[in-house]
Image (cartoon, rainbow over all chains, first blue to last red; front, side, top):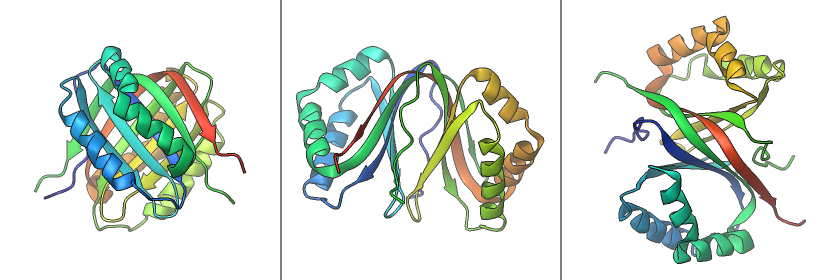
Length: 112
Length: 112
């Protein structure tokens, strides 16, 4: 499978950018990530999310939502809240969250 | 030096998220990146930028601007335009750009 960035969606949409540096504690992270990913797939107002992680450095996750209502519901989801709480206690050295409305977007894919 | 995500800025501000997959061609990339970084440092309306890159996978760069005017000027900068053109020709397999206005943000840093 070829890795590609998620495509440009139809504006306006909502984007949450989560930049973070992880602790050395990886316990439970992959399982929780997979579980949250499954929840996201089931939510029609969530357009998708994607991550990049520099080894030993910064991680950036970007989540895309159809509207603010979808984001609010996701923020209040009980499993997501438990994961955020656990993350602050164990997985994150530091993080910043930026919540924004996307006004324009475009994409490019090289010709094969 | 401890790596940290950039802090939450005072909303509203403008955020450009550039998600991409690179080609194998690294020629000139580091030099151009350093040069653009220097230009960004000199621009008072640019709040900063940060990147993460999964080896063999996705890269995400996020740039933060005080306002849309600063972003427009940066998009029109001649050196930046030359770099974007060269990037499409050589460095990027695929990319997506999302331009957004940040409405809220917050950060967390673990106690030492």
